[in-house]
Image (cartoon, rainbow, N blue to C red; front, top):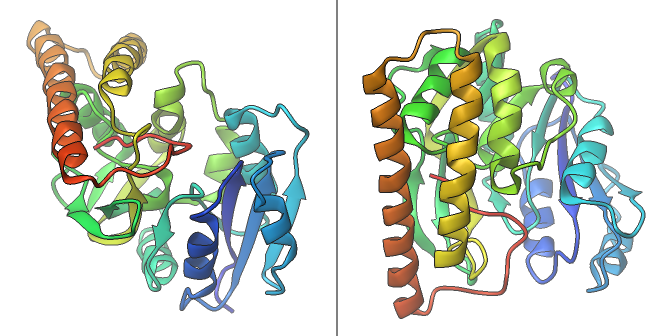
Length: 287
């Protein structure tokens, strides 16, 4: 029998995009799946929508009002019963073959703790703005996890992408809990940094899903905060790096984070002019 895969969805005021996400999860062509929605006490009708779901693969758990994003992500993750786990945010989408393809990647590489892939960037209407984003600087199809994190450090950005692009071996992810939002914009990368060193990372160049941008995920204010929080993450990485970092490495890392900030600001300005921004989102984009 195919291994059980858990797709976990932290939910807080997820409308109007939550139904599209759930529809994309239920349309997966992988046969052995559970979908766990962790409802965090929102007031926009998300809870009422979740109550209407009759698919037996869907399970809803509830968190008390006031639960933080990191605590909800952690509760959703720890509720997973599968051999593999994917966390996906409520605004995003997963393409029909995503789980099957990434399970194949992990099954073919027993030493891998994560399978990662490209993703598309969509606007509030679901139209594709950019295709096959992510994985910059990662060469080859299988890399040591430390090498992947080193690339994130040197480029000054999360080249892995948002959680929708990642399938974890559940024991490796559980061992890295909880999700830590000390630097909220580094919520995903901080956990990747705890999981990836435990083994290899399998890379798929095709997009497995779509990240939805919004006024809160791309903005000058967010870009400035991300610059500061990326610097903090780089400093943490430098203190624990398994490989010594040269002065040239540190300069390259500093240049990288400033280049990424400039690119985000330029992209935001372009999308704003095109009217592609939608309602505020619950998570941020990193490339």
